[in-house]
Amino acid sequence: MLWFAGAGLAQHVFDEWKEMAYQTCGEDILFLTGLGSTETAPYAFGRMWDTENSANIGLPPPGLDVKLVPVADGKYEARLKGPSITPGYWREPKLTADAFDEEGFYKLGDALRFDDPARPEKGLLFEGRIAEDFKLSTGTWVNVGPLRVALIAHFAPFVKDVVIAGADRDFVATLIFPDLDACRRVAPDLAKDAGAVDIIANEGVRREFRFLFDSFVKSATGSSNRVVRAMLLDTPPSLDLGEATDKGSINQRMVLKHRAALVEELYADTPSARVIAIDERLSA
Image 1 (tube, rainbow, N blue to C red):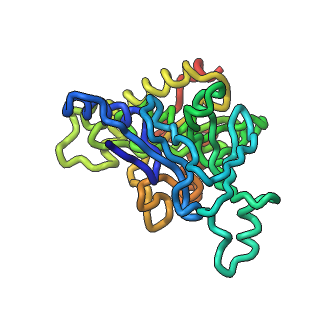
Image 2 (image 1 turned 135 degrees about the vertical axis):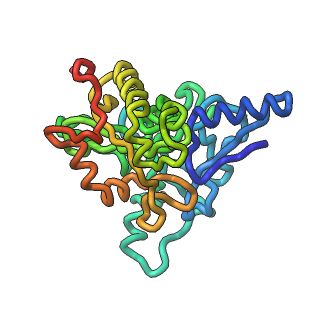
Image 3 (image 1 turned 90 degrees about the vertical axis):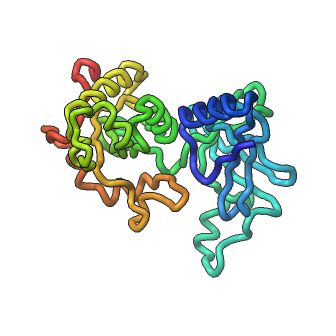
């Protein structure tokens, strides 16, 4: 079997791993996962069966009670109670009080959705951190988790990760951590020793991203998933600044905090040369 945990796995990577496993072994290899936190010791959900959706985290184990509190659009906040859940934080009474609801359930902070509402036994889908979601200036909610997954899948293999911006703004924009090796393949004119700055400034690379952005916008259903502007970053997320964890997952809030100047550049009335903007005809 194969197993991933600690951070989400992009759908295209999940699919490619399963295909490679089949080609290598001549049979399907289970690619399993789970979800939890330090406070849940750490196992809270586990998927012990095959699935086509990499976001399926399975079901809770026996003895663990899960309360699903409706959030919006078919999503639920997961809250947990059981012998494996911490009773609180050491000498932190306020932090402990904030972490539990009035019935003593630990608030995991993750948004979940049923894979199939008619068949709950098929498991739950991880929909991102509730704290990451935000509203545009119009009052429209942006669900960061699903949008981030969709962007990474659409731009594969040219991106490693993305960060979604737009809180209290008029539209959604994104900061992109590109896969520089993949980007090189659409820029044959680049020198072998070209660095990140030269790669992301290359016209062939930018042309590819413009094309992908325009095609992504065509599939948008509204302002909540219409990404209007983007910027390719020439430095990876920093572990020291808390932009990324040692497990490789992105901390949206810290990236937006430490790269606030780039976010302002994204939203400038007149975009700089570094900003990739979609065809204005598509944003109407």
